[in-house]
Image (cartoon, rainbow, N blue to C red; front, top):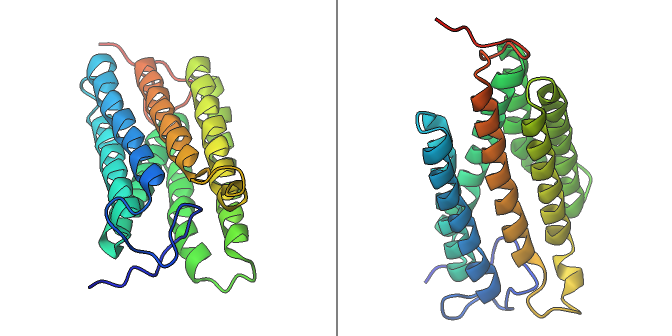
Length: 232
């Protein structure tokens, strides 16, 4: 039998870890919201940008991430944790690339994506003298800085996209807050607040897809912010 005594622990995680599926009911059930937003994103892309295949890929990654999150919180196995985390990382990197290519030259877009790709490696393996919460805060600071840069670059090209991008960032920050205070919330809610991380972060992901659709609607050439599309 697989050893389940590993990985992140939440307010809802039993001690010792074990039991019937779902081991963490609120966390597992709330993860279905991620799948719902992924499916809603697919419908939105099909309606607003039916030829934008990268956006379909993003939405599929969101659905897979949601399924992985359900299985992780329901089973607490290593393969389920990988199915939860890896699609989420790919979603962030791919979304950042798509956004940056619309508002910045290729070398700047590549730099942002490279920094985000190296971030989880650095936080996990570098000998940083800080607790797990500090490492999460450091990751959040880097991601917020990248998001703010993208939003600022977007304002001139599409104010509507910049607005929805800002909303996505605000939702993500709210999600990170509830993720961070999960153990503090145990005294007030038996299930903690991790389930709100799922709901708000998937809302942010859906809003990010909307942002990319709005950028796609501008028809601006890749890497040339503020340029008008060439009509033939």
